[in-house]
Length: 440
Ligand SMILES: Cc1cc2nc3c(=O)[nH]c(=O)nc-3n(C[C@H](O)[C@H](O)[C@H](O)COP(=O)(O)OP(=O)(O)OC[C@H]3O[C@@H](n4cnc5c(N)ncnc54)[C@H](O)[C@@H]3O)c2cc1C
Image (cartoon, rainbow, N blue to C red):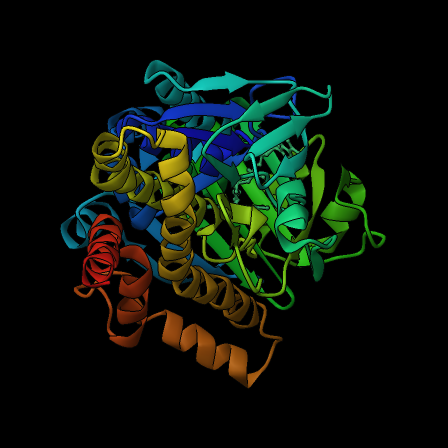
């Protein structure tokens, strides 16, 4: 079977690795000329790390990134620690894998190297403009047509494949929030010569300041040689604008009155990008015939639960696993039983049903993920007042692991997100499908 993946983002590359591990032929078509992610950090929570472990990429990701030891929530105005949750060994004990922080470029490079090493063909400068669902084949902007058995639209928030799957143009909805994203080098922070900044930089920790209408996240990447700061605030960009070079003065003014340590961090950002945060209403369908969507193309989320890429990677894994099972159980034997039937014809008969299984097992989980991130916005951005104080009090007792959580509810909720037997889910759903065919 040949799988065409549109988009070499984190989801598309994870899908390429998963498909190659199942011995499927893979071609990844990427619009941009250069192979790289934006220069910023990203968290890989345990559900993402588990899938990446099964794909064989976890050791390299840990080497390129770092294991989070603490997550600290602070009050926005005085910087008081509301909660310092131990992550490190506790997370590994509870979920079997660590919570990782990594530079996006390094995450991307590990996945790209792994995909190409396993034999996936990755083509840059290859923009897909159309899909022929019958072929199936994709049409590039150059006019070239590429045929396969399955097409995966991993082309992100402003997906072209999604429009073709739904048969109508879709535009993401603005959430009302935007993100300033910046990275800086350790020397820049050392130059501030402030004991609080130095203390912060020595920790392998994620620090989050929670304030009315805004919050911010800071953590080290590249072994503490660089640092990532994301500032989230109400959107003041014009409608339709996706990303611009931000105004540093405006950014600084937005955080006047916040913890002085954060203000000092912000003061050494020389330039910043400003990203509009958009999502989509829940899609009716992610698959039509042999074409399926994954990641931000079908369930973009506010980045308030650090789950967007993790969910995209999970999607990619599920597609690879299910298609691998299809190849083993149907295509090899079908084409073998009936010599008149080519693998391509056998694939045409089975792939649409298998992609529907993919959609079914992924949709409920990703929808919960997207909603939870929306809910986190409400919780993180509570205005000053009694409700905010109650939130602070609850946060001070919350932990991600059962052992560290005094509220019980928080770790229970996080366990639904962070501990997920995706491979088992795929195998069980596929087996049920196979048995249903036997009974027909
Ligand atoms: C501020 C911020 C912080 C975040 N933090 C985290 C975090 O800590 N943890 C986490 O898990 N997630 C996080 N996310 C979310 C995460 O970045 C995304 O969910 C994830 O990168 C989506 O991956 P994707 O592969 O689906 O799409 P993308 O990364 O958007 O990749 C799509 C690819 O398709 C290509 N493409 C587009 N159209 C075409 C075409 N027509 N033909 C060919 N190629 C095409 C694009 O060039 C791109 O390379 C964050 C997001 C933001 C904005």
